[in-house]
Image 1 (cartoon, rainbow, N blue to C red):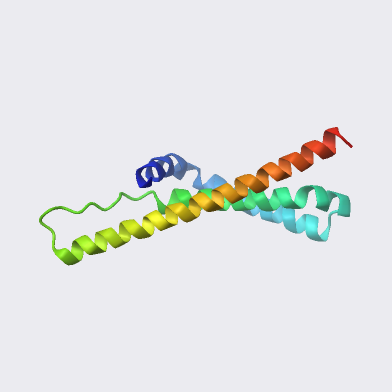
Image 2: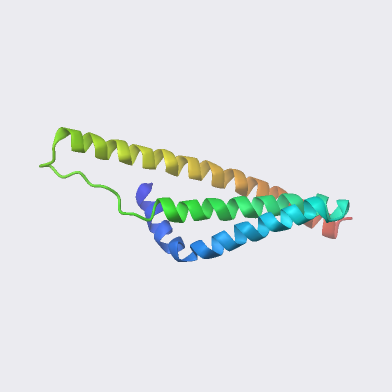
Length: 124
């Protein structure tokens, strides 16, 4: 799992500035809708702005956290060093699980937003 995350992180690493711009832009749209938008616009687009900002932020975290090489223990290393490497790998694995859960949650919210947008545009 960590190798998968590392491989995709290296592909996403070049897109980190885009993720930051997308997150800030979506947050700005959310704030604008909150204070200056009409209630109809707010109901229709606030959740999509939040989901876009969260997704961009999670992808930025993914690209940043898993970009480094995974530590490998050699047979000649001491016991404390091997334990330290295993703890580091365990923490990375927990982070990978957390990122997976957050991505699944934002994907679910994104699908709900798309369902609402499609229903509002075509069936009302």
